[in-house]
Length: 354
Image (tube, rainbow, N blue to C red; front, side):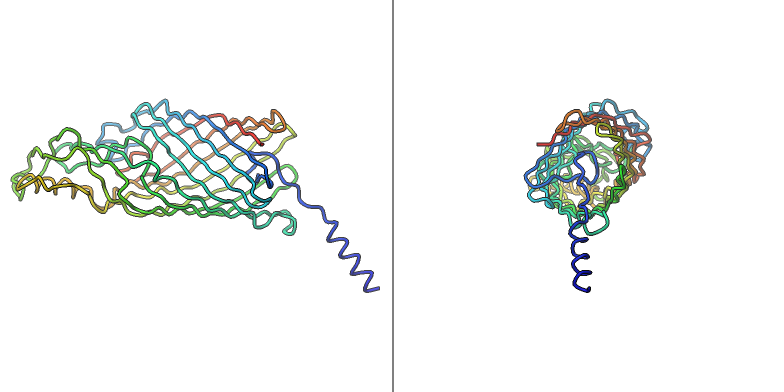
């Protein structure tokens, strides 16, 4: 009798149905099987209205509109095994209003499926590690001239790179109930400070410095500065977490939405790497004054709260078209140039499995 019961239990376990793997690339729990690849290619259009931070007021850009902002992004992934995927992601932003453009995101790494749902009542658990590719291009900016006798205000950025390499580490847990999929995720980013930067001073512009250089009344002193210098930046920590939901209406149509919170760390300047060997006396004192004005925190951190939605259509067995929209609320420090009152992006994605 005992032997019969044990045999029946073993057969029951072996005959338990495996939880179906989603093949919808827009689904937050999508993962390719061994030997399967996929790509996501997107193009978006963003509208921004800047907020009234101290930095934007100093630039004369408080509450200014920025449009059009073009956003391109792509992701490529390949299943090494059924539970291990290698993937890479890049994004490019071109803001015509402020003449700023460049790679705004870059990462490459691995995603591993710890639980595939078969023995966890449908619950899926993924962990991932990605290299941050911010060091591919240097931080590129121009010094903002002083206004009203103050020290230099900061940098007017030409691109979206901070010039740093680093790593993302994260996890996601989710489950599918009939046609609905829900997931929660969280990840942390650490970057390493370096000197991968170019800061231009322009054509020896005048800066307000103590005049005479060692004290006295404020005045304009024409400093013979080099055309450009590099700065030594500090390491940073950033965080990203949120919720995702997805509903597959039928074999053709699916709809999704989500909410995410992300921190943007303040940049920290440890040193200005300036060659002062050709400067003497008053010029040297003035150059040191200008360089010292940037040391410490740039006070440009911010928090973002991102609401997203998508509608996806399965055009063929291997091709999917998705429309997406994102609305972002944020709170920025006084010297941030990225804070907004309105930030809306809409676009289209083409997803292909191969």
